[in-house]
Image 1: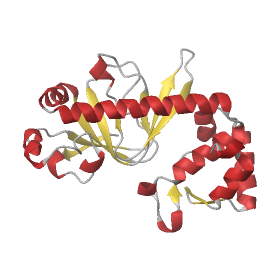
Image 2: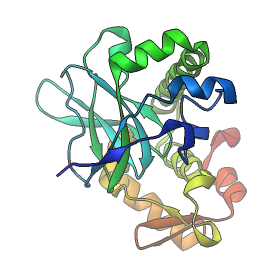
Image 3: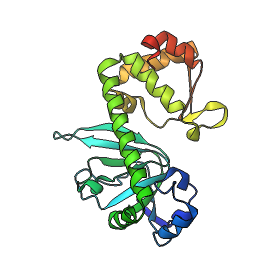
Image 4: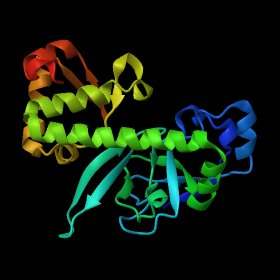
Length: 238
């Protein structure tokens, strides 16, 4: 069940450097002093918002991991993106649209809930915020294009290796000795990459035997990445 943790203070927020307010100077920070988003806590598996419901709030992910699901007309859902700390999501309302996905925590998460109307007012006052959001839109578009290329042009092993290498290179999530949290099941990884769970399991088991991958308690560690690229990825395409 979701819980209101309190009010956020964007000026002093510990992840402001990852947020849409990151580029504001000292003088401009005063303009957001009255903006206090709600800090919400959600448990794994809860729904933050549903696809096609009114987009009244945007969200910044403070802690944890969130998956965005596209629900198909037949009721099936498909993972289209996994979000990490600092990601902005649910901003469909800026284009006058309902939410285009369903957002579900993969772990316990903490988010800042940003009221759309107030955020629109701030965006008009501070062009830096609009520029930051535009950059995020461009990044999302590029990620979608990259995923289309991967699904259409890369073989199964290349897709999986690319995903695991990218995931493990996120230094913000790294634990001791290169271990990185991996809450996705093999089925969820397959869903994200367009692979069967059997294919994902076969490659991961093989790479563990070869010493490229280690797993423990919901975490992974990649090793000999250059060698994995050489063996699996055509022309180093991972």
